[in-house]
Length: 356
Image (tube, rainbow, N blue to C red; front, side, top):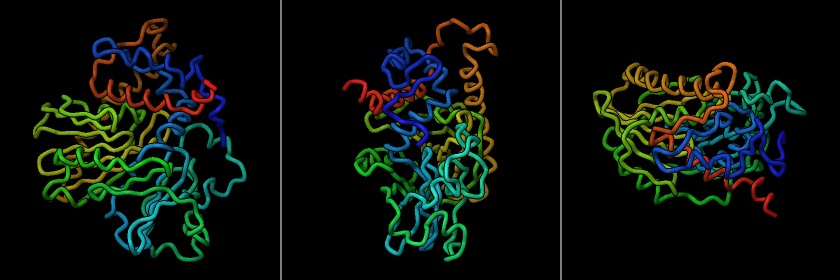
């Protein structure tokens, strides 16, 4: 472990587990400020997110159709934890990978920067993921077999796994209950009605923006429903034709419905200021990805600009902002996101131990 949670999360003279860090960002609409820049540029803040978000929340990792045959394996790094979901003869099983740190006895310095490295050990929690591994590639003597499953997969540490409209979710905390009622309520907004139940196309796209800002800008619009307790928000935007309806199921699932198709976006941080989007298109038209990519690129431009703006705030790169108050949070989805982050940070082990 690179960080001991009981020692706290400090950087830039700030305590990320303290209520005062979030205080101004939780004011009423019109009076709330943006989260401090360190929430989007510090290498320490993702360590807090790993403790209170990625290790505790239900995280979307893909869909059932990606591993359609028994034995197929879907890798996914959750925070700094390398896990996989494998289809079995009677369902799905989620496990921690055998080689959590690849072939390294200690975690190398280049892997401690907060950026996922390109490495042949894709099972490692500090490296970039590879795509689905078909069962035919998991022979007894293959590197994939040993990295992910070892010789006795039944002895690997298990994680919770569940599905919603064929989407696969994992939870690393065995004590976190399944939010079935909340998921059912979110499902009532029509994202998977009719022909939207089948994944027709998919692609990975990476954007230079923090995952929180990318989620915010992909779902910007007029709020039509939200659940602060269950962690989802639904919006509509009429800026384009057809009208787009979007949902963010915190932390990493974004749904966008336009016309007779739904775009499913699984957010995965690959650096403090970079996010991988694992994208799937659900609907009757299997050739529509180019149009969706143009839509996503346009939405992501706002996130990239927002990341550049907030990460430079108070630095020599933006001298006019030094010593000034942070801007107001004018976006409803941004304000909702800040509340989700603050609520989880309040459950940090560091904050708990400080009160003992």
